[in-house]
Length: 146
Image (cartoon, rainbow, N blue to C red; front, side):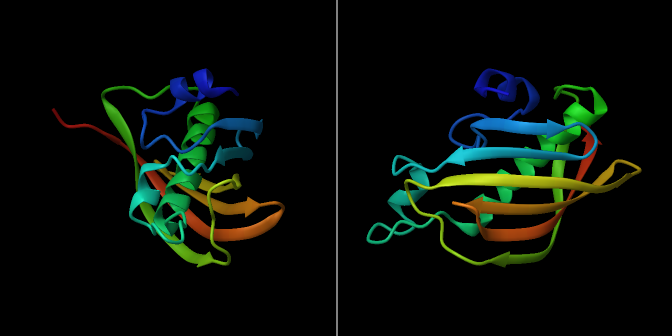
């Protein structure tokens, strides 16, 4: 999936869209996507100017966004104005190496289960084949109350 297809499957936009391309997707099972990490990211101005490091919370968000694409594709739906996917849990999060400008952050997500609108995933972020972060993620689809 290129960026135009990603924009159809995620409600996020700059500066919060954290998936640049989907390399592989097996609907109902897994996704492999990536984010190009550049020095132009707005968070690098303050995290940290003398030693820029991608915040761990944004690595988790990038993984969740990839999981969102997988979920929408699995459901055969697109994002709509009357519902939203919330990030509802992160378990067993580990950060193993810093992610720096110039890195290509590969996002690997597997669906562990889906029940009553709650999705559970196994997530890994890799740079140059090495795991830099991993976690168990949970997301839930909820209707927006007007």
